[in-house]
View 1 (cartoon, one colour):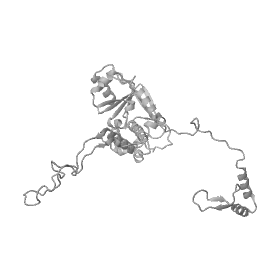
View 2 (cartoon, one colour):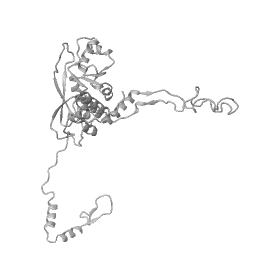
View 3 (cartoon, helix red, strand yellow):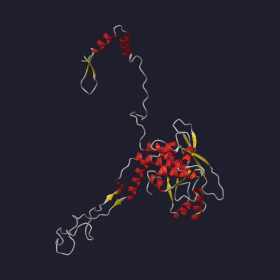
View 4 (cartoon, one colour):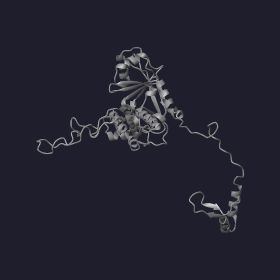
Length: 367
């Protein structure tokens, strides 16, 4: 899939157009979603997946304004994956942090990391062809310029001939040599999770432990959760307790889904697959890994103390500025204030050097 720079805005407007009443025009519907413009002073409010604040404000300030607004409480319902009867209710809800699922949609960062993943997948190109000067053979004129009844022709190694060479020859190239800062990848992953939350493309289930290994039964469970308009899904699990071999066997023959551990969640996979189905255990592990990642890489604040902790704030020493206060008070209360300022100025001289202090004492008491 090719990432579009208007991924977020287009998806949001399309979703808004699908959900609007038939009696309202698109412009009136957008205005009826939220009459009040959101701000950082809004009271805490529960924002389920798929809800967003005023769209015009979000699109206009896409790099700094989260789509769910500020001070939002993000809740995701927990569903039972394997339901044997007709109707099933959500098992409960889980609250996810705003620092991961409620960030501004930085499409520039997403595009940069997506291109990085694509180049890494391209790998190393070992195809090689020759330039015209590298092909062995003579460079003399192949035939006479005139009186041959044929077109003019120079060297037979000219680019474009079937036995010739190439103007733009292919060379071995490492497409995965592109480098991206780890902080940018970490930020892009959180941004993509925020996009999936606003698009209502995240479904939390209890586990992937199935009683049958048949593919048709897994397809029934997926269609019940995702509907018939979803074309692809990413199944994220913890790997040990929330999935069994029946689910692995049943999902091995469905090309539209992909199973991944928490470590395999990336910006590329989140962009490639339309919906994300994640278990409770995997969601807790994913949040923990993202939040503790800066500490693992040593991004936290460091202190030059023996124990590595912040040094205590030193307490003030009594009378440390008594001489300065006494001088200021004497000058302020003197009858001839200009004379006192003149005497004070005689003790200093101004330096023309641009380095160091511009005000230097006339005489050094320590000399």
